[in-house]
Picture 1 (cartoon, rainbow, N blue to C red):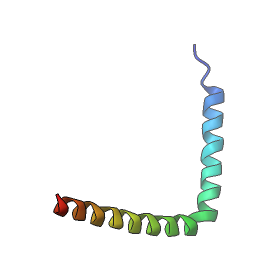
Picture 2 (spheres, rainbow, N blue to C red):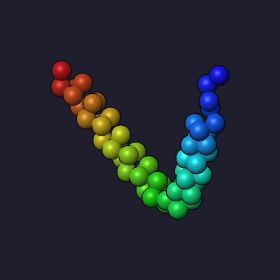
Picture 3 (cartoon, one colour):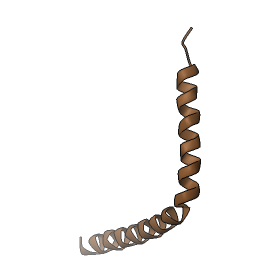
Picture 4 (cartoon, rainbow, N blue to C red):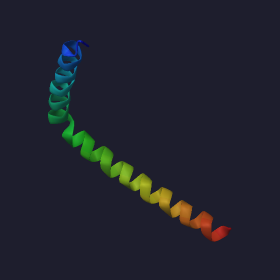
Length: 54
């Protein structure tokens, strides 16, 4: 038998921490997502440009 209990405990603790963190930093995450979306758009545009060049 493998002892899953400590792993489960760690997992649950991490989930608790995640929920706490997400509640606190949802605004930060939203901002980050906006920034990453912008970066992705830039990336796509540069890819299109490089395709046009070749």
